[in-house]
Length: 310
Image (cartoon, rainbow, N blue to C red; front, side, top):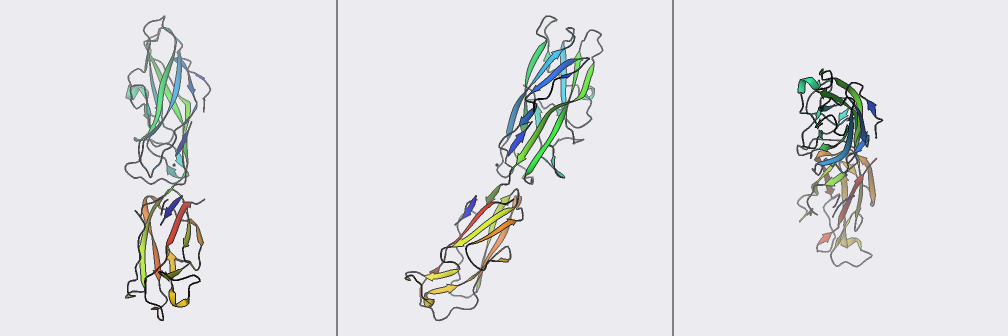
């Protein structure tokens, strides 16, 4: 919730894939097979990651090393994006090996073309045939301020493996084979960027209109609750309640060019402000120059509360 007088998160997911027999090279399985990267927020930049494990069992004890790459299911060039939501692409991401090397490549990449360093190496024929490799799905912070709408972004990666120095020395390749599923959920987030409460001052009524641009960011639609202490009345300081007419000045209000006839009021599902943000004009106006009022200072306090829409 965002409140002003004002104040105003991201989630990723992947499922344990069934082990797939790479007949020429190795048996491969993932745990979990569905990977969840939590807490990624495009408005407040911060990198997030999630770990998963890849289990490899070589088929031939003559195999001395196994090369591994993952391929993205949607993107044909770097940098790859994490899935789609509707027609929108997700954020950039990487799959990192234990040394921090990125091993996810665009769709249809050939492992022979990129020739990665063997991720798994066997010391001899008698070493353990099954090896566990810790991997990470890494989503960098949204420092460019790229716009992302709320929604779930996801896809299923494919993997390709190549064995080296196998018994027949032909360096067999298996894949692409369906691998772990990866997804990211960006919730509806809203944040006020107007730094603090502000004052709209009609002074000596030289102008009957005063305005303020309310700054905000959001990944989805926004609800706005509007209220004021005196319900669209500026009241003379020191006036006793119930306030007499000569101690009040009525004013009109609009937000985003929508008239607010009475308070409290709620504007639901206002347009998404975007990650870069936008401003909404808050306009106060007087129907006419006040007359017949007791001299003094007149004021009202307006509160806007912003929450995610639906």
